[in-house]
Image (cartoon, rainbow, N blue to C red; front, top):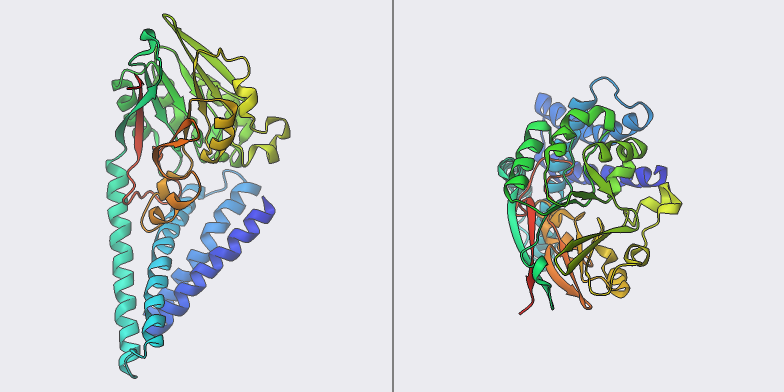
Length: 383
């Protein structure tokens, strides 16, 4: 964690420094405007790492929640502005290479005008993303095709919630609305594939409480995401069963409907769990062990990159989250191009992988071009 935090602080500093050099310096601000702009940039650089360092060493410090919200807002603004400036400057380099740059002083004026445009566009995109986040999530219905599906499992309904990130930007009223939407889908089974909350179990107990009202005929299943290990792992492992969830750790359950058997396995987060709890390293082969051959075999894994191992182990489906589909522009153009990160249903070997866009949002409360989802899976006979 110390190494990760150090790298994150350096990278975050470079993001802010680039914005200062390529946005504020060309603007040639003076007096009060200059002081405010540079103070805001320094605040942006310091507040984001500071809130996590303080929380790590002193959980529940005074002003934690307002400071965390401020950190998320500046994170959203900077991570929108930075790539926009990069695109502008790449265009500038291309124009320089083609000898198309205007002469001074027009060159400085062009930089100031384009910088203003980047600033206005950043604010507009942030506000649009905030509106989209507040309106969502939406229900995404997905048919899971099963060859030789037993009649008893035809139309079986599974509702997935994932990446809720309950905390300063997702409080009890929002979670209660998500619970009502999930219950209205009349699920046979509810699954929560990790990253439930960002904070301690004690602090966020009132906000996670609505999850206890989720109702499904065959119960509720949970697998850990990376954020369960970042925030109060022991507290959440004790709290989640109190909300009515069964935690799957390289294990599975079996559900019988007539002659049909549905076997649902789960593994812990494959990226972080071995560093915190070495005995809990993800193991799809262990999760499938003992599943009847004729069963419909589903694996719950927060990380979609486990798909090749899950397919080799013999699962029919893997259901994941984690990537948020990039969550907002322009990162929604980058993240889906990473291995196994593209949202939606795809084949990996003989197995189907579904990657959710996530029900909530991490960091800034924005969703832009990547709406949050509650996923309804329905088992259908293939063909």
